[in-house]
Length: 586
Ligand code: GCU
Image (cartoon, rainbow, N blue to C red):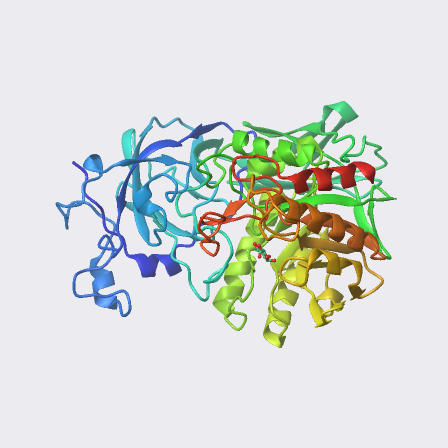
C-alpha cells in the first residue's frame, strides 16, 4: 500500500529546475496517459510538517522533509485507495469538487519498465499547469514552472526493472510574480494538461535540430547529447543528403515548393546518427515586413484571422487533450475562411500547432505576459524568458508560425518597456526568420477619436492592437464616425475586436448579448477596419465561447466569455456568417 510521499517543495522549486527542451519528434514513445490516482492536498500536508505554515516555512523542517516512503508515513494518504483522473486533462472539468480548485494535487501511477543495454530513457511532459515536482520511486527528478510548455527529465538511472512509482505534485495557484499573474480572463485549468511520455533513445542521440529557409538555402543545425558523431540529414523529395560533422549544414540554391495557406507543402526530413533516427515533416517559406506590408514568400498577404483559446468544443469544455480536440477547433476556423490564427494567450499544444500547419494556417504564438505582470521582478523575468525559450525551442521548425508575440494588453510604463524589450531582444537573438509582435491597447482621446500610441510599437515588427468599439466603447453604429491615429510605416494587425452574444438569444440589434447585436457589431467593425491604411490582418475575438471566472452573468454567460463566433458546443452565431462572408470576399 503506497502512502503519500513527502517532498521538499520550496527547496526543490529552486534547486532542481527541469531541463527545458523537446526530444526530437518521431521518437519511439510510450504514452503514460490514462487514469492516474490523485489526492487533493489543499494544505500541502505532503510537503510541510505540522508546525510549519505556508507563510513562513522553516529550513530545518525542509531538511527533514525528503522524498521518501519508508521513514514518515501518513496513513490517511493512500494512493491505491485514491480516486482516478484522466491524464492528460485539467482537473477542473473532471470533478465538480475541483471546478474552482486552486492548490496542490498529487498524481500517481506505476510504470512497468524493462531496461535495454545501450539505451537511455526520458520522462517527457507536454505541459503541467502551473508548477510541479516529479519523482520516481524515492528519487526527486526535478521541478518545472509554467503551464504551457514542455519539459523532460532523464530517468535512465532511476527506473528499475519491473514496477516503478511515478508521483507528480501539481499546484496551479496563481501568483503576483508568476507568468501569467493573478488576474486573467480565462479559466485556471490545473493539472497534467498535456501528454506524458516515456521516450527511449540511444546513448548518443540528436537532442535538438533547427531548420530554416532564407529564400535561397536551407540551414540545419543539430545538437547531440551523450557524445559527438556525424549526423546524416536527408530530404529525399528534394534529393538532398549531407553528413554534418560540425553541427551545421547549409543546402545552397534549393528551390523547394514553398509552404503557404493555399499549398501547405511539407517535406519529410530524416536525421540519423549512429543508432538514432528521427523523422519530421517540415515546410519552407519566408516571411518579412516591407513598409506596411507583410510578405509571405515575397508576396503581400492579408491575415484573415481569428483568436482562440486552447479549450475544447463540447458541453463540458476543458483544456484541449488531443489532436481530435484541436481538429474540431481548426475545422471551425477553416469554415470561417481563416488563413491565420492567433493562439491566445499562451503556447497551445504541439498537436494544435502541427495540425494547423498541415491545414495551412499561419500562426501567431504568444507568451502569457498578460495584463499586469510583476515587471520589476528579475525572478518573473527569468520565468517569462524560460517560457519563451521553451515555446521557441518546441516550435522553431514549424513553418506555419510567422509571429512570436511577447505580451497582451500590458500597461505602458518604463519597467514593462524594459522587461518586454529584453524578451524581444531574446526572440531576435534566437530566431531572425520570424516577426515579433505584442497586442497593444488603443485609447479614446475622446469618444470619436482613437489613438494607438505605445513605445513598444517601436520595438516590434508589426503594430498590433486590441479594440472593442461597439462593445466596451460606444455602439456598433459609432464605428461609422470613429477616427483612428495609428503609428505609420509598419503593418497593422487588429489582434482583437468583437463582443458578446448568447447562441440562440435573439432580439433587437440594439440589445446586448443578442445574436443580432453581435452581427451588427461585426458588420460595422469590418467596414471601419477596412478603412485603416496599412491593415494587414484582423483577429475577431474570438472563435469560441470560453470559460472565464470573470463572466458569471446568470442565464447569459454562466462562467463563459460569450465573445465566440461559435458557442462552447460549436453552434454558429449569426456573426460567424458575417465574418465568413467578409473573408470570402477578400
Ligand atoms: C481583452 C483580452 C482578452 C479578453 C477580452 C474580453 O482584450 O485580451 O483576453 O478575453 O479582452 O474582454 O473578452
